[in-house]
Structure formats: C-alpha cells, structure tokens
Length: 408
Image (cartoon, rainbow, N blue to C red; front, side, top):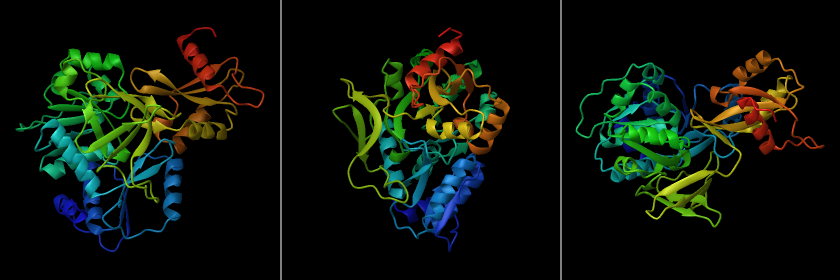
C-alpha cells in the first residue's frame, strides 16, 4: 500500500499546494474528510488532539516552528501524537505501508477478511485511527459514536454483517459499561471487544469473562500502529490471561532484564523530526512469554503514569502546580485505581494551605483533562531530604494511607 492507494480508498479531494497539514477536528466526520484531503494532498500530516491545553499546544507549535514543512516521500509522512516514555507530546512517524502492515496482521490473527468497527475512541489517537483504517483497507464499515452517549445508555443499533462488528475500548470504558445489564447484552453482540490503552486489572477481566464477553486484551502502542499481540476471545473465555500471542506482522524480543523490544513492518520510522535507525525498538515496558507463547506485560520501567490510556509525565504536572504559586512543594503520583488503572494524585506537605480553586484554574488553562490530578492530598511528615529531594515511594505510601483515612 502506497500513499496514492490510501488516498484513493479514502476518496478525498487533494488539498494541493501545502507541505504540511494539521488534522485535529473533534467531529469524526470532519476529521475523516480533513484527513482524506491531507493524504491526497501530499506533504506532512500531523494528527492533533483538539483537547490539548495551552502547554501541549505550545509544545507542538514550537516543534513545528523549528522545523519548516517539507514535501514528504512515501515514508514517515503521517505524524501520530504520543506521549512516548516522557509524557511530553511527540509524533511517531508512520505512513501507508506501516498502517497496511498492521491491518494485514490484524485480519490474519483474527481470521477476518473484512473489518466493521464502531468507533468510540478519538481518531487522532492511534487506537481510534486504526479502528477506522482496518475498515478502509478491508472494505468494511466504520461507524463513529459518541462515548458519552453510549455511557448514558444510548447504544447504537448496528446492522447485521457477515463478519459482525468490532469495538475498541480502554479498561475504564469497559468497567463503566459492565455496570449496566443492557450494555452488557449489547457488548455480547460484538465479534471482538478489543481492550488496550492501559493495564486492565484482574477483577475487571474476571468479571468480563463471567459475563461471557468476547474480549480481546492486547498490547500495542503508537509506535507499532496499535496492536501487535492479542488474546483471541475463545482463549480469553477459556481462562487465558495476558496480552496473547504475537500478530503475524510483529516481532518481539526480550532483554536480559525483561525489557520488550519490537520489530516488524508496522514499526514507526522515528519521532518527528528525526528518523529511527534500522532495527528493533526498545519500548521501556517489561514482560515475558509464558509456556504457550503468550506475551505478558509487567508494566512500564519508567515513571510515566498511565491513566485511562493516557500517558502523564509527573514532572510536567508538578511544574504547573508549582507555577501556580500555591504549591511550592508537591509530588505527582500514579496510585492504583479500579476505574482508571492509575489515578493522578498530587501530594503536598500538610502545613501548606493552598487555594485549590486557583490551582484548578491554572490546570484547566494549561493541561488536558487526563493530566490534571483527581485528588489533592496533604501528607505528613513530608518525605524530603535536606536537599529537598522527595522520596516518591514514601510519598505514595503516605498518600495512599491518607486517602484510606489511616494515620501515618
């Protein structure tokens, strides 16, 4: 698949004369039309999150200003945003060939010749984009829907299809749908419920299995054009756990320390504006293979918080909190959460008396919702040494105890 072939499938009229396109419309219909025009028009294509706050937008604007737009070739012209391992906005370079490789691997793994998808994830995100691309490249139907409406119980009625329908969810979405009997029955009608974006907790998976949902937990990232390993629903319902076996297009190796490296035709070309050297990509995730050849991911080996599928750099949030003038000493933590996987929590010395309204106003101006702390927790004693360096593990212990109402 080359860019011209993808443009033909998308059917967009070319937006000529532009070397750079930014696509970030919140409406799925307008997003798809703008994306189709950008693909047909040549040049670099940047997918943008319409919910970015000023800080994220400033990061992106500074990056694009520092690198003049270029007329792109066949490789690396599509920039998909990712927090990477840093939590800062970066763009992973993809193109028609990497997307097509991911779709081929997906269809072979699940035995599909045509993919029909209900889109509940945003199209600027790799999981939402690839749900659409699987339909485009296989001649299937893609139907976007508003998550908030589905959460309220407004469940789309999907027409019968020979190969049925797929839907991609993050664990938080699945957890909320499982509270409603109508939603559970609706989920049973899908051929595949693809689950990713963040670690799913065991209780959630066990509940989904008990309800006989055709769940497919998987592993992937922006850098791999989404899924590279997945459990098939029959395996999941038979009791298997983990991220499943590798899709045909992907390769995974493990270092002596258990760090996952990936290779294959769907692998990104580099972080814009750079190009990645040939070879495998070390993910920063730890993992292992079980005796059945299924991949198990044990978690990130860095400090990034993953909440509801979004990556959050604690240092970035801390800088905003300190910059508000209300919290000179603060540490941002990712505490375990049954709904979000991890919950962003800001802990501060109990003797500080911040005006949290002012703090919240600063966060709302500068950061996307996923990055804003869900709770502010005063703790004592403040676990810092004489140089002011905070013991993050001790801060997390104290914050967790404070939230449970336990004395330190």
